Image 1 (spheres, rainbow, N blue to C red):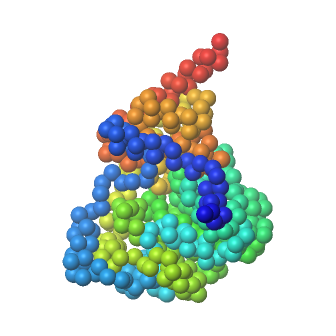
Image 2: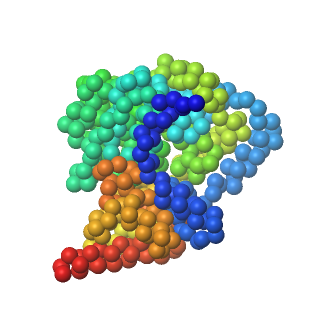
Image 3: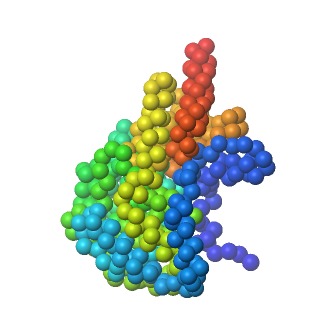
Length: 398
């Protein structure tokens, strides 16, 4: 029996860029010691107080079916947090709780796209963006940014790409580059959305990790609340990646329809997880800063180390928990470099090609090791890349 074209075409017959990650995990399972700097997984687990609240909720009986849209108290907390950050009126009717940010990303595209529609997204991008678009039966259109423009899309790029397009997916702070879209870029996104009548889907899961600049949500710009869907999550902000607790914020009518989708797909999020989410959000901004601060420290460590390696290019991150290292001077693609680094040094990083054309020739390094271990490992990566670069330069001179 044949599977459907829709599911066959999710990856479009191509690599999803996760080969290095899976190879590293296989090596670890076989007993090989590998240092992982590949994925955005905190080096500390979920806070014990959050786990205690989760356990308490479970033994108190919150293990049955929970409301599909989410517990009202949690939805109200998310709405209040959002309104406080953006100044845009937000009620619990604007919020649906989802099993993580990825589920919210899928629901957002399902809500605004018909089969055969075109959806735009900005390159570099998180690996699941094009596959999510294809999984809802739509066609994807990339907007390829340039390092020379700080990976910020230009007005003309946005305008050209969104002609006859239903949606535009944006991500700031950006994964993988760590770039925070400036006010001009956000204004351009919003102006184009109104001009070309497209939905803006804004992935804001890293909005608590800002090191330079200011996070601006498209939803808070004039006349944008009714055409913007915002994806949020506790995965990065509260180190709750495995709890799978996210949300989608949007106009009431859209959210009510995504509840219909969830009823026929996910059936909501377990109640004991949601009660832990309530507890986590009640800890306030101070707790979020405690979770985010180590990544800024390691960012500073990395930038200091890079001063010793002038032959290596890099993209100073303004947010998120990653750094993009340019390895083009080695003569290798990001994928080949990452594979060689894993084989020779037993260090796993993500090749830039996993995140699109604009990130080719780079590797994404997660700032997710304890400070001293990160400093040692990152220096080792830089030495490895620098040595390969010098060898290539010497060979080219012969």
